[in-house]
Length: 405
Ligand code: KG4
Ligand code: ZN
Image (cartoon, rainbow, N blue to C red; front, side, top):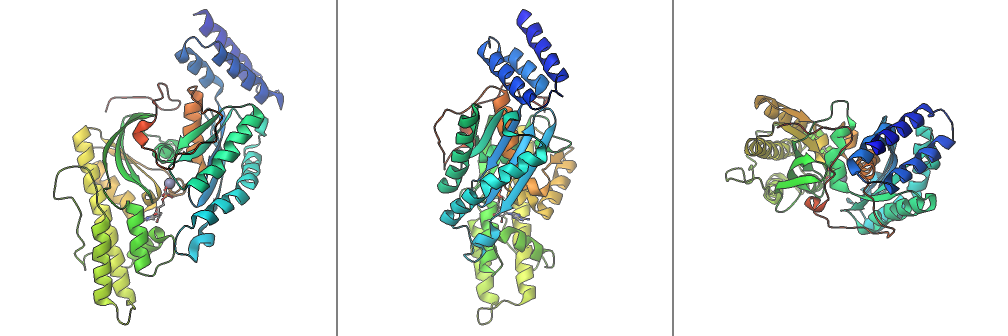
């Protein structure tokens, strides 16, 4: 009781002194360290830390985007910067890991300076640093981990390695109307397609996943076969808007049997067969290309929608979130909205720029875990393969409350 009153008094004082200029950040940092040192009751400490919030710098370098952001648990997203390596990899038709790592090295520090300037803070105002530590390309991950871990060490602040897919999964929390727990998450990126029951941060149950290609990977491979530019997903979905999605009978894989797993490699084979049948001297007519794109997209979207509906029925949870790069797909967003609403539920998704890789989702996820007292040790460690369900739970999460399904 005495401890709680002391902590609350400290919080009120610090909030009152917010205008003390450059020393405020340092003062708050010292007080938070003090609170953790005397920590007897994590709930009480969390309640008090929440009073003045934590400000976290997030670094995302797992693949071909350098994303840097600053997130404050009291005031929300303060700044974010994104640099896409599309131009670097376009001529190779896909991501070249070594080039990705080198480009992250070039861009990380300048973007950190830009993000801090946009947020109007200096490094001494930061309470911690979050970096993507997996899954992803090992060299690319190591760049963010080295920068993040070293900067935190130099500043004497905690650092945390964030799971990239947890970043995606929590990205809808960055929006004005964040979903309360529990919810069902459809994670659709270039490397993963998963349905997850989310009961809180780190409280994840895998409901189903792709047995072969991820949805984004299938989009990229089909686009490449049609000669579309890298990255294939956005190019294919743009072309699909001009095509007839009923001309070809694309299959809806694994929808005729129970369960929540996916398989997209058959769609790739179907696409290849159609291209070979229609191409004249290796060239497809524009209408054929557009009709194949439309048929392919409709098959992926129908399959994802059906499994989402099944997952909501199976769990009895009516809130659905969509996250990951394929979540930027307009037709998928619209169809899932209709599906969820028809079931008396609701769908939540991040703005399109936070569906694809970005630093804001890493800063957000890291801030939640740092605010709960979690942090990584001093090793610069990355985990290229890392099951989401292995993450520890966060008992108390800032900004979202557990409610009944
Ligand atoms: O989440 P993300 O940026 O990176 C990974 O974690 O993999 O997802 C990238 C994937 C790529 O496969 C890309 O083609 C796909 O998301 N993607 C799309 C769209 N925008 C990005 N797929 C379909 N429609 C889109 N509009
Ligand atoms: Zn991603």
